[in-house]
Amino acid sequence: MSVYIETYYESLNKWGEELCGDTAEVVRTQDFVVATLADGLGSGVKANILSTLTSKIIVSMLAGGATIEEALETIVNTLPVCAQRGIAYCTFTMLQMFPDGSTYIAEFDNPELVILRQGKLLELPAQKRPMSGKMIYERRFTALPEDTFVVFSDGVIHAGVGTKALPLGWKRRNAAAFLEEKFRPCVSAATLTKLLLSACSGLYEGRPGDDTTVLTVRIRQPRPLNLMVGPPADPEKDVDYVRKFVALPGLHAICGGSTSQMASRILGRTMSVNLDYDDPNVPPTAAMEGMELVAEGVLTLTKTLQYLDEFCRQGGSAVIAGKNGAAQLARMLVEECTNLHMMLGTARNPAHQNPKLSLDYDVKMRVLKKIARHMEAMGKDVQIEYY
Image (cartoon, rainbow, N blue to C red; front, side, top):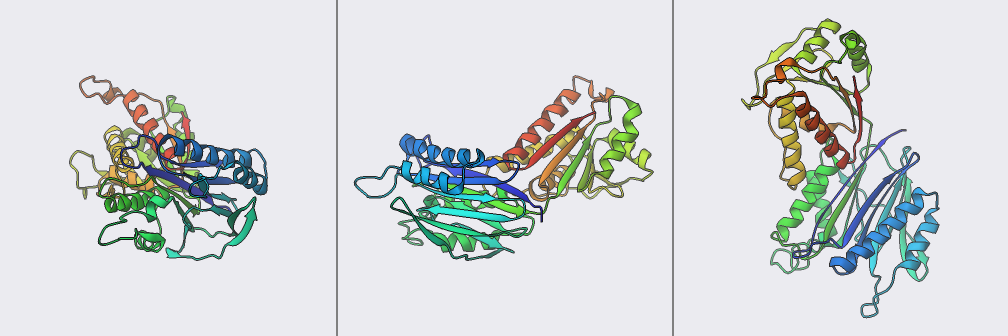
């Protein structure tokens, strides 16, 4: 079994603090992915330094070839203890996952993570391991495709504390029930993270009483999205360009009128325009055999970037809705694809040289690079080829 490990994390700072006392880190090596979430005691600069140190030590040591035991012992022996409260200055959760699904989880004083299997809470017993006077909770098992791991700091379980509805806070069981309710088979790690943070922000009434961080890891079957934009600079390469594109496994999307006409001609496949769309500012899409999406170029891509900007800027309320080509492409990017392969032709379209339109080749390339950065921020692999 070879799977893709999708990750995403995000934080809400404690109200009035410029720095977050939680730190999440993800490192990918050729052999595994390691993800950590560390929570420094208190808030502000001191908490931020301690959590950053903890996360960096774990991921750096494991990525450098150290054993789990060596990394954990280093952290446990490094963490100071608060003299007044008798607790560690930093708590953490770490996950190490391999492409075959082999998974190791270690938790130290963080809220117990939530594991979802087929959208339902999976309770896995943890083994206790005393280490330098502290107790580490460990789990070793084989994850299945679509298993989801949601790690969070105690800002999540403290959300709503003191209110009439939740005088003792949200609690882990409430967060787990919320995640079960919001789970969908195609939901991304980024979407689940944002949904949970948005709920916490609402319970805090927009003023978080504690640093709140969510790290989501999803085990997914690889589903590449291949995006072809623009014809090659050399017309003699058109045939090889198109044939390579259609031979790639995964989803296929074409953006650009001249690009889609080129593909239609070379493949001998007809296109039919779809007039069922909801935004007059986005040109209609077309249907072509073997393509999940055929859309116009610059206008569609620019609107797609706007959808992604809004999704990344907002919490879980940033639902990408709509029938237009940009909304369809944005949903494919966020929810469906695990890795993005861009094939970008560098031929300059004479129609885009009109300075009054500001729709030139350079604008298109800037938009595509910004889309790629959003995808990388969501924990997805991005490959770009120029022709």
